Image (tube, rainbow, N blue to C red; front, side):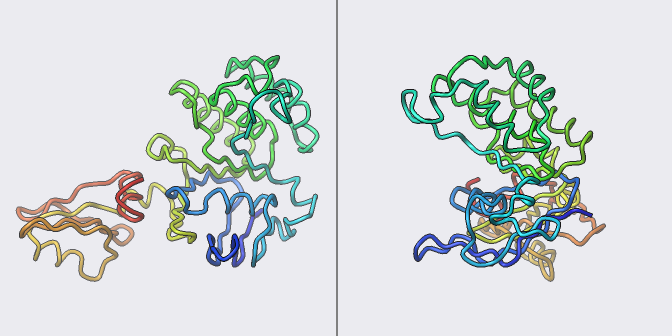
Length: 291
């Protein structure tokens, strides 16, 4: 099975270490959700994994090929991120969309022009406009089109729906799922709009302060994590011996987020309330009060 592996990845900017020895394996044919707060290191990790940024320590391989400065490996990876367009028509901003897409074709050996044409139509994108004249949402559409049409076996999306309205976001998720089902590619989607995208994530990665603190099947995670509240002594009894996150106390009452064992169930009692949690609530409990 094809894999992309991060082995002991450390990244420093000067004296500031932003990634702390990350070990991670991405498997062929899965959609991963990469979730973390601002500054957690998501973009840095994806840029290193795609060979756009060198690691301070560690190594990235895809199918046992080193990614850094290796075209055979880089041909298997696409990293889609926000385009930085300067004011006026300088640099990339001066290109028309159609010319930018034509240039993108040269970077990806499996680039699918038919898929590109379909996506242009789906997003109703004017390819005659210059990039500098596009809105933030339209620029996001351009990066999405390149990423999907690249047909790269490993495709990373960094905040792909930034600036898109709800209709365009739904279009992206629908097409991404269709392309995934047809091609068996591996997608990693980094997003702050967690619950909207949760249904398409087969596995979820929580990145917190430069470390992967969780890598789980999304559905199994949601089934295992619950919010427990009630009298302090009763909640403490439930928490004992289990992983517990984000404890709150109000008087003699207590609430906690608790991870159960696989297949384990907790039921409401007269003194304790057990409530399910969605993916966003679980992330907030594990990584801070603000998503």
